[in-house]
Image (cartoon, rainbow, N blue to C red):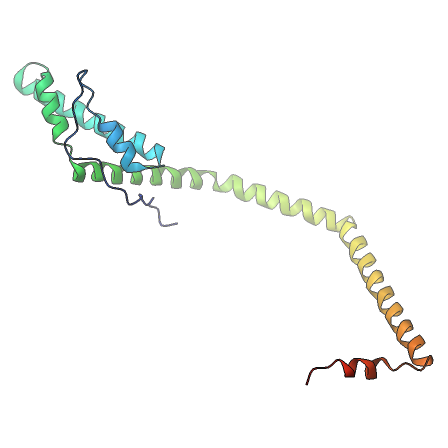
Amino acid sequence: MSGEIELAERPVASATPERQPNGYNQIFDRIRIAAGDDQVIAFVAYGLYKLEKQEWARKLSERSGRPPTPGQADDFVDTWGAKRLESVLSNAANIVSAYTNAAIENERPQIAKDAIGALDRKLDEIRQGDFWKAAWSSTVGAFGYSLVIILVALVLKVSGIDVLNVLEKFRPG
């Protein structure tokens, strides 16, 4: 495993979102479009965006003594161009990849235990004779088939039919 999730090559939606009357800023839509089918990465990327927006609003409030105005919030959204969206998507992919790798690593002992248990069950089946019964019946069947072919060849030979001579006629060349 490389430890990284590769993002699809998709264009990030336009750098300047179109404003809607209700203040909807379309960042999530732009992230979702850029992430394509990777919805988990889109949700994580949007969470990263919201954390950054919250940090921006906190710092602005500390400096000015009041929360950001709607115009300032719009200005913040306008700073989220294609490069910034690509960066947050890349960070989200790394977070999802790290989480996935950690989850797999966490489950590795149970996976190994389950695999060993399955092998033990198969070995028990073999030891109980199921395998050897099947192997023995296959061997007897193959031997019986060979005897039938030999008997047919002998009957044909006694009848005066040379099987090898007949087959030689069909040989190419």
